[in-house]
Image (cartoon, rainbow, N blue to C red; front, side):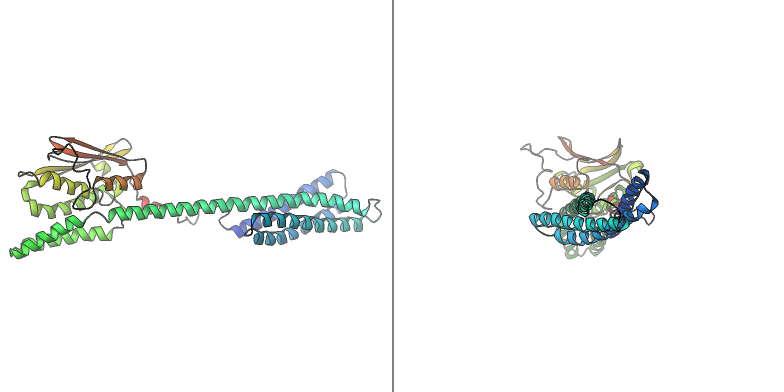
Length: 368
């Protein structure tokens, strides 16, 4: 995903910088807390020197601990936790020894025994270093979970794109073979003008299908223009028997949908409505607003249900190798639960009703 140069980045976008920021702020806060407590208890300003030395020591020792923890993160859990505890205990003992030595050096007349000083300093150091270690592992665990979630999302997006591409590439073989056969027939009949015209329109249609990414979305306006190219080719075969009608509301002309979503619906309508009837059939494509959605209807004036009561349009097309299941799958891949797909049949024709979100932006570009 591209990031705007002025958009603030996540705190952990740069893990190394985040570590140094937390390290510096954490130990600065520890110094301020211990220093203010010392002054509040009526101690002289010189008593801040041991606190400062202790803070610097803790800061330096935790840098060494961090190096050790990075190495331990890749080990087995029992090794990681066992070695981490030993590391923290050893580091706390080192810090406590330095704190006790600094205190006894500054307060030579103190009656406090050396062991008592060490144990008191060890308790404080163990508390601070234990909290530091717990926070270190908690942040690393959080970052690991976030990274795994990002990887899973990336894999899901890749799988979805691959599925969309596979569905798109299933669309055109039957139409292409029919058209090439028609061109071959026209050439054999020496009708070169009609053959050239059909070949030119086929070239324009195929150029569109090959240039556009298989997972791209186009506007309804662009989809209709592609349908018109396709229908111009088919009209050279069916002439007046094929009567297309387009009713597109300008309010939804720039709404986006997966490219070549409607072409198989029109192809099925030609196969099951125009081809069987001597007088042909009307094929109507309409797009209208429906609240926050777009309602797209592809209907024909064909026979509707066949004699067995089955919807021929829902069956897998013998020509394309796909049928309405392909369209349904592409809608689910593109819009999830925010789409609907319905078929209606009557003796006077068959209709497919699709509703998708009224999206005026290219989601594939927005997500890039």
